[in-house]
Amino acid sequence: MINRYRKYLQILDEKLDKMFKKQAPFIKCQKGCAYCCKEGEYPMSELEFIEILFKYNELEQQIKDKVDANISNLLKSSRQKLYECPFLVDNVCSVYQARGLICRTFGLLSYNDKTGKKKMPFCVDLGLNYSNVYDKDTKTLTECAPDGTEPLAFNIDRTTLRSPNIERDFNIFFGEDKALVDWLREEFQAVVD
Figure (cartoon, rainbow, N blue to C red):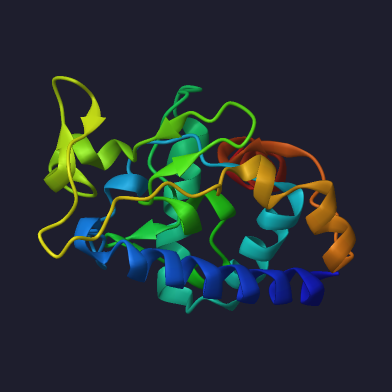
């Protein structure tokens, strides 16, 4: 099943790459930015977490030691709702190729197919993605980019990306959904204690 999931990720990444390129005038994401990795819940399915564990097991020992320390510190700390992703090492995702769906789509303007509501990435308030066309006072998109590119919202919410149709088409099963810290607690708590 993991190979079928990887095929799905490959196809998804190709589609997301086109979306990010189409929205390039609004996107400020770059290696080392990492604001999106510093305070979140990081919801993911069991299948996403399993893929991350595969990548974690392939890490160089020096990086793995840093991730282990991050995981240990996270699990020893209070049960906070928002936390820094323990796979973030020196402002770079150590499991980037295996990152979760929410991480792959972050930065784009999205909408929920059922509600039609648009969702701005929080980094707009940091002067990053879409900030060049976002009015903070009215909380609306104000205009197109100077080259005429329109800010577009995409149906990339997790429910859509993990739909029964996706599971059927790729013959995969995402499994239970939890916050990353809860998956880590199950996997690593005995090591931390």
